[in-house]
Amino acid sequence: MRSNIARTPQQAIDGLATALFTPILVISLPAIANTSVAIAAAVVLLPLVWYIKTVVYDPLSMSKPIVRQDFSEIIGDDKVRFRVGSRVATCSIDLGFRRYIVFNSQDLTGQYQDWKALIGHEYAHIKNGDAKFFHFVGILGGVTFLAVLYSLFLATLFLLDGLTGQAEQFSPRGTITLVLGLIGFPIFCLLWIRQSLHEREFRADRESRDLDEKHFNDWMRRYLRHEVRERVRLNLAIAFRWFTHPSFKKRSEVLQLRNKEVKFRFWPETLRSLAFVYGGSALSYLVFMSISSYFAHNPDLPIWFIALVFATIMMPVLSSFGAISVSAMSAYEQGGWRASLKYCVAIAGANWLLLTAFFYAIVGLGQFDAITVGVPAAPPELRSDGIWPFFVIFLNFGLLLSMFTMAAFWLFGRLRFSLLVHIAIGTLSLVGAFLATKLEWWLFS
Amino acid sequence: MQKMTITAEKDYDLREVYDRILDGELENLVDLDGVHAGSGGTTVFAAGSGRLPEITISLKEHKSDAEIAKIQAALREMFGTQAHIHIST
Image (cartoon, chains in turn red, purple):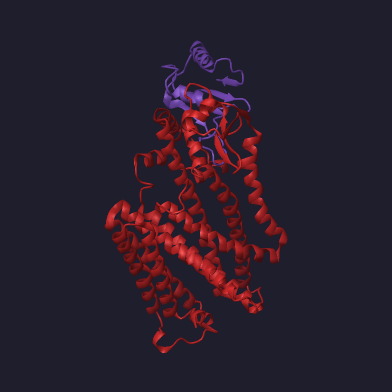
């Protein structure tokens, strides 16, 4: 039985990141369907057809059932069905009502007896719900990614039209925001999917080793040797292997860290967090723009819809905060205060630099007034100009946020309490930043 | 340089043959540094490292026909009666 409460940073980050997929689908698919039903259908159907054919239909159709009582006894589950085929790679398939482990025929024969290592690995994928999670990533993640890519393509066309003077009406600020958001989100999407898949491989390896250490080590040793020796020509299949599975070098390294989910790495974690922040924030802004445009055309909406709108706008932002929080705590767990502080300062600094750069880009393009057109003036005590608002963001969003999170983690020692503190402080800091820059003042007035 | 190539017909997988050569089953007949596997594709979400359709063995020193025949015989013995494997030199 899986617990619904996140017990590790990875589980927490998965839950939070999942929340990010919903708004983009809610907004982007009807928007695409509005312009082209055929493309919207393709965006939805292509990942679905590809996934079902490649990951479900092919392994099942190219294999035959086998009955092996010893397999069921080893994994302690007699409901899993086994199949074997010479053209399939060993994998697990969980259809909900039926579960399969499909073996490559060579993995079952020969002197190395790979099946003794693989059966534990594949059964772990079924037992831990990974095989079901693959459906989510393969279909929903694929649809989201394609939708974003298509939007990026359209936005780029629009930007080019605007820059070459072909567009009748052109809004650089809107287009720049759109393009930045649309670049940030696929990067975030891919990073998250890759990390989530890799974490699941590490866990399956660990559980397989617990089941049969001798054969597992033998299998790992030989594949590590393949990896070191093979001259790999990069092709699509190899790229996909790299995306879905960590290298055997990495897998063997992680296995040595017995009680840790993954070793904290400063630069990848910092870059991933920035992708989370900008993907989430830009997405939130896009959702906000789309919904306000929808409101302008449909003023008679039920009152309960406001709560839904607020949740849809806030979800990506909260997910971004959550991602930073989880990374800060992961840094604290793995490297103590020093690592966590270094990470938080890097995030705060990078965030400040990027925001400042955006601000000057907007001012440089002469679009600052355009942004504030139609925005009611803030009360005098909240007005501010120039670089000052970005110091406020820096203080609120960066250091303060991270410090409170770490303090909460230290005091409570529990992931979910510090996550709540982080989200609360993060929301407050965001409100403070919005007020300080007065860009979105009318949202709160 | 003499080169020996082992290729598998259709979907046959040479992973085990490759491992057994690397584990030293050909003893001193070939230099292990000269043994390389051609990379194959893989299926998404699979556990293993993909199929090996081809193995090449670069022979550093020039070998006589008799020595080549000896290596081929040793390989044949390893493969058993699998007719879908071809060895070319």
